[in-house]
Length: 305
Image 1 (spheres, one colour):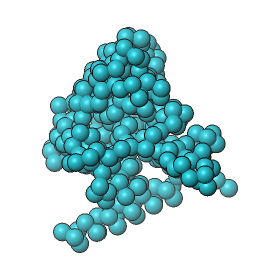
Image 2: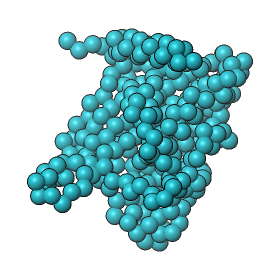
Image 3: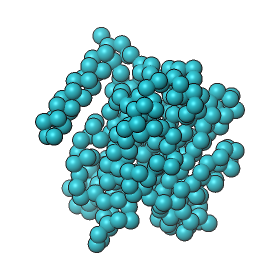
Image 4: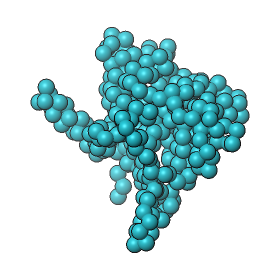
């Protein structure tokens, strides 16, 4: 017998009417996230249920190689990806979309965009209801292909008191010309994950992607885009259909927050080739597992200190 779901009702509040969404990364997955998100926000804007601001941040520019898989045309080559997508989908769906054509390079990089008080300023946010009556909820959506930026986003998640951090990650295509590995190459690059981290009143309700996949935070080889010393590491190519599945899973989480004001799952692993998604449902036993893991982590930190 399946254990019943206990939705995260923390977001189930009538006063949650304003949302501030920041998308980090405007490439393969990010482009589809922005398109689907704008379509979703258009519907909410028309109903008047939620007021949303949307920001797109990416320092990359459009190249010829991007035209096959990403949301760009020949005339976009050479222009900032963030600006192109903000203009294009903002115009199509008649939404104000702000572009920041630069990379996220520090944990203070979103301070002027996020509305949440810092974790250290506890006097600002003890009363959750009064806080949300005057501030929007911040949602960060990470659509990046490197752990260095995820490490920054993890630190940003820790710095602020109220935040939702959604991370989308895709497997790259395995590259090999060895005939014996042809099947491995054919079936690679279709998997991925989406993790939803939630923090409210300074308390982590759902841990972010760096806690779910600890290797992200211990990766010392990953470098920030544009900051590599010597030769820049080459990312594995991604499949368009995998980008689409990742984007749809991200938008599913955003829809739950905006429409239902609750979440029923913490993370989802998907495979676009097999058309499968397996999510971790929010059940009583899973909440207990999260609390136990958090307590163990606090003990480890205290011992290390």
